[in-house]
Length: 379
Image 1 (cartoon, rainbow, N blue to C red):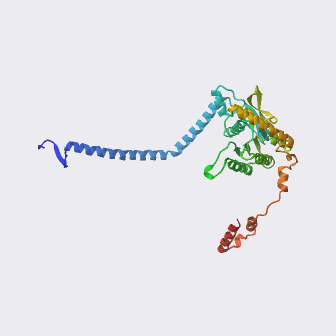
Image 2: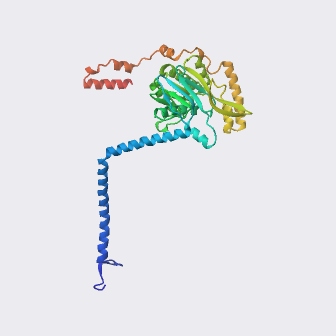
Image 3: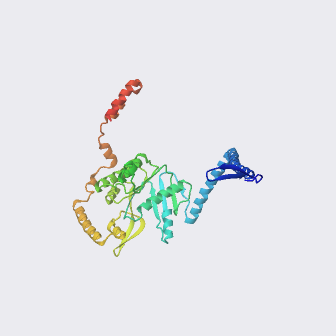
């Protein structure tokens, strides 16, 4: 390397000799320093911006809150205008009077397929506060239950509702036992989840609550399921006394209409036409005349030999049912829910008795620990 060439020897390796110029070295140093300076400047600008935001946090929070309210209100208004929704009227007392109610999600899905949605009325007023809804699968029972719950939620959120008109009183809580799901992570089957949710409803619902119950008792045997559904209907009527829609396939429950004053029977209508089932999706007064289970199975595509065999088995089962009086034979003489509770003797609970007899204030720490161990052994 000649002197005055502008290059300086930097490093010698086995097969490589490296040179660098003073100008390139200074340029590389400035590039490296520029990256560090950029990061420092960015951090400084971020701190300045955070300080500016914190200085105006109250105004920014108020603006965000106002924009959020405008966003929700405009979205609800737009949806109400597009869907022809109406303004709900709130009244005192126990009232839920919906005329021409619709399910907004199902209605939109049907509209995309150019199919109409069948609107239905729901009137839970005064002594008609519990509806027992029967009818075939796919007839619209679950949709009817859900749409009324959605209308209640929308109304109390300050929105217009998907109905021709709606009069309702305020609901303190809304309970739903609809659908089937397992909780395998916690070791709960579908029926266990159903019973846990039903128990929560019976324990917490008040006279001002609104409850929808769909197919309670379907996850177990016919006799167990009918017995549970029967008892739940009576408990809702006699104890909770709330507005309730109860959908079921147990036609035997229709006998409760003769005993429970605030219960009325309704069903989703369907007709058979030339061997095919026509679902009308209309909720009308009175119990369903039949379940149309085989007709629904035919719609689902079950093989003809299976349907023929099922028809033969059904004929034999119905003949046996007519002969014995059916699975609900003997229930007509059953006392009402409240009377049955009063007549049922209370079992002794040693643990509760021991706790009641304890004078907690008089126990020393050692005595309290001894009593705790004793109570734990009793459990």
